[in-house]
Length: 352
Image (cartoon, rainbow, N blue to C red; front, side, top):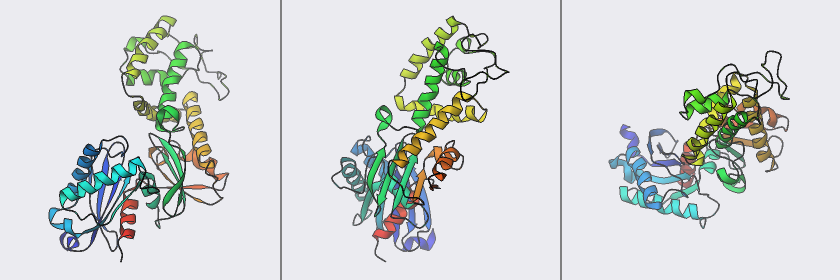
């Protein structure tokens, strides 16, 4: 870093449910000087003492001790917080933890900004926009209208129990449901049954064996198929299907519900192999995200900044959602995360 540390510095943080990222940059031009990570930073689910430790951990790694007095502004984008209201519980918890972490390290606390991780991600788009729509589709799913860099309207983001439709959790849960429906005779055959079972470590002798017949979108077996389910799944007897269910259910229930999101990549892989059930799940997920965006009443051409693994360059919902949005005169502007936005907001907080 050399002489770069002798000028005014800013720090941007992206504090999410699995980790906290911190970026040190120059205040004048936003040049990145270092990056680091710490523990989870969700302001609503991580206790304040633990959140303080995680923030201090990330900050200590990225800001050299001799340069800490040069930090002129810090902005944190936190899951569970918002820039719209200081009275919001998550915002209050995030500010308390961030201020304590900075003080512990001797970093000035004169200009500390707190916003949501989504507001930070929106600001990460080229030009640091202040107005438009933000869409997140990762483990969870939420859309927001951003006005003057503050979230003013929120759609979904209601968590795994009540919402997050079209999210990684929703897709993963759909995969497990498809496996159970195949086993009990209500659903179409799908490779997801065997893939989910293997991922959960189920005994090999309870998994479906043989080829899975191909079905069209209407549920009709294609000519090469082996017939209607369940008799059309060779070697998967009623007794073995019952054993499959008996092993699968406790294996799923042993983990927190949100862990179902780990099955989302299986759906993407199965859809890539033209599994009809997996393709249907992804179509429905894209439909849900479109519905979420449309609830914000977007104007044709209005900017939609998107983030989250489902919508990235290799995200399984990028193309189907982009196609749906195109018919409404809308397009996606993807960003990797909120760190560049948090840095930009910190720079805006520092008078030139």
